[in-house]
Length: 281
Image (cartoon, rainbow, N blue to C red; front, side, top):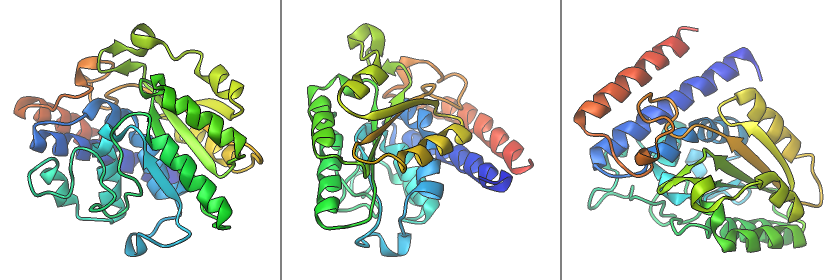
C-alpha cells in the first residue's frame, strides 16, 4: 500500500463517518456508534478489497459482502455512495417513508447490497451459504461478512462457524467489530463473548486480532486471509465505538440514538476539521 493509497483510505473513512452523522441526523433515528467504529473497515472493503463494480452491481464473479450487524447500515450506505452505487445526497433520505435506504439493508432495492439483514446472527449464515454456493459453481469470488461483538452472543453464529469449518470455506472471511459495547452496555457484562480468538480457533477457524482503525494492520490481515486454504478466516477488529466523534466515543448510549441539531453540528465540525487535515497531508 502506497502512501497515497493510505491517505485515500483515511480520507474515505472520514467521509464515511460524515455520511453516518448526516444520515442519522436527517432520519432522527439510526445507529451511529457501531457504524463509526467500522468506518475504516468499510473504506478498506469498498476502495481496496472487494471486486465489485457500481456499473455492474450483479456481475457473477463479484465479491459478496454481508452486513451481519445490519443496524450499522448507515456506515455501509455511506461507503456504497462514495463508491458510486447511488448518489451521496440520497443518504439524507435514510429511514424516510418511500426511501430505498431503510434502517436495515434491503437487497431488493439498494444497489450493491447482497443480502437483506437486521435480525442479528443471521447474516453470517447467509454468507456461509454464498461461500458454499460459490465453491459448487466454481465461482472465484470471495465472501466477506461483518459481525458485531454483541451479535456473536447469538447461538446461530456458532452454528454457522461450525458449518464454515465443516465445508472448508476458505473463500469466506468473517470480521468481528470488537468495540466492546452493545445497546445494554459493555459486552463483557451483558454476556461475555471472550475469549473470542480462542472460540474461533476452537471452531476450526484461522483467526487474528488487529487494530481496526489501522490500515496497515487491516492490509496484513486481509492478505493473510487469502493465503489460508481449507478453512475459513476471521479477523477480530479492536475498535472504539463512536470513533471520530469525541462525545460519542466509548459511549453505549450512542449505539442506537441519532444526534440532534446541536450534536450534529459539533460532530460535523470535528469530522470536517479532520477531513481537511487528512486532505492536506
